[in-house]
Length: 212
Image (tube, rainbow, N blue to C red; front, side, top):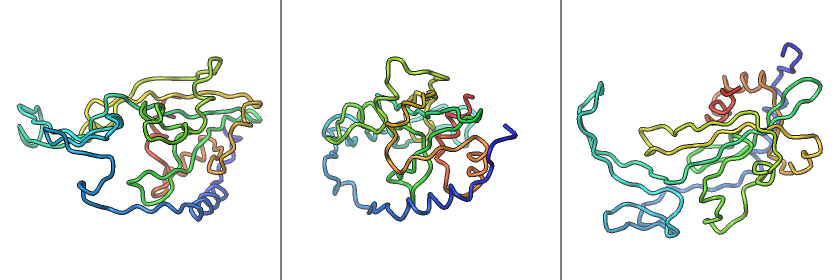
């Protein structure tokens, strides 16, 4: 570990460059203006495919050791959880992890995220788009699994949503499938330093790498 390159200047410069290519436009609108999302008979919000997440209501009572004993709240419900994976490789006796510069709808800019992030609805292509990048590596029959476990999303906002967190080691010959310029290899020392900076590391990266 002492031989790892701990400098992050090039990574930060690279991320700034990738941000210039991000033309995502996000506009806040009313729920009644959303295409393909509808209110059901209980006023829950669902996607027309009946996949992805829905917004449901909860009544909480007899809450133990909380500020109040009961309350009502909306919460995100997703019967199928997510799959989060980070690919790793060994180069000159240093383990490197593949991160992906990606922006989610609630983000203000690109963040360094896991190599692969998808829900079962994404894998089913319920959005009508393409398969998630690196699908073939993540689900390869002969993949070298380093670690895998189930973690749950933050329970104040998500209703019992599980995520399968995975670390997979790939061969040098498999790196040819990593073509998107938004992918970057970083070692653990660099990731730790990047984590100390504001708004660069996606929280899932930390959750996954805590398994090593």
